[in-house]
Length: 300
Image (cartoon, rainbow, N blue to C red; front, side, top):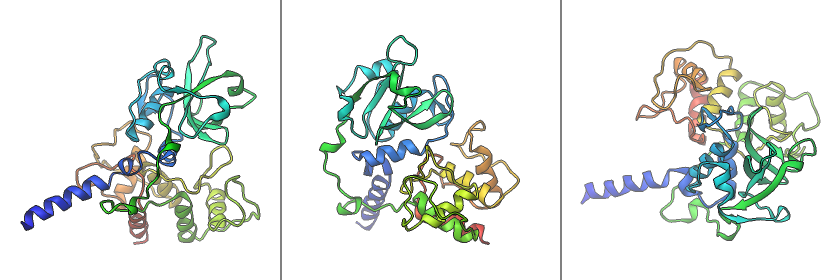
C-alpha cells in the first residue's frame, strides 16, 4: 500500500510539473512561449529551435501549448475563424502577402498592434502589423484557431492537484544580476517603453541593459517574460565573463545549436550538470530555484 502511494505521488508530480500543460489555455502562456525564442535564426523549412521559417515557428509555439496546426502558411490560412483587424485578440494568427502572390508569411498577434514572427532578415522578432515601411501594406487578414478570451483562467495553485511552478522573470533575473555584479545605472530615464520609472526593478533593468547583459526588443524589455535555460546560459556566460569550453554531450544540445558553446562553458565551470536523464532542457523556462542554484555555484 505504501509503495502504491509513492507511485501515485510520483505520477502526480510528473503530470503537474510540465509548464505547457498547466497553462495551455492562457494567451499569456502562448506569448511567453513565443517570446522565449526571440533571436532564433530564420531557416527556410525550419521547424526546430535551431532555426524556424515563419509557419514552422507558429506551428512550434502552438504545439508547445497543446494546439496542433497544419505545417504551411497557406494551410494555416484555411483553418480557424476569420477575424477583422479591429477585433484582433492575443493569440490570433496574422497573415501577410510578401511575394505579391497571396498569403506567404504569418506570425502570432501579441496585442498592442504587434506580432511575433520568424523574419528572413532577423529570425524570431516582434514587429508592428501597421508598420508603414513594410508590414502595414502587406497585411491581408487573421485567423483565430483558439479563443483564449472565452476560457476561465485558473491559477495553478487553485487546483488541489496542481503544484505551483515558480519561474524566474526577466526582471527578477536582472535584479539579482545587478546586485551580484554590483551594477548601477547612470541614466535617470528608462530606455524601455514597458518599464516605468517607478517599476520595482527599474534601476536593475537599466543597469543590466547598460552593461550589455540584457537587450530588449522593439524598445520593450518584457519584465514579466521568462527565459529558457538556453538563453540563461548565454546571459550567465557573458555577464560573468566565463571562458573555456568542454564536451558536455547533453542529448538535447546538438553541436550546431546557437547555445551549444555557452552551455558547455557552464558545464566546464560546474555551473550546470543538466538533468538526470542526460538532457540540458534547452527550451524549458528557468525556474526561480534553478536560477538561484546557478548563482550559488557562480559565487563559489
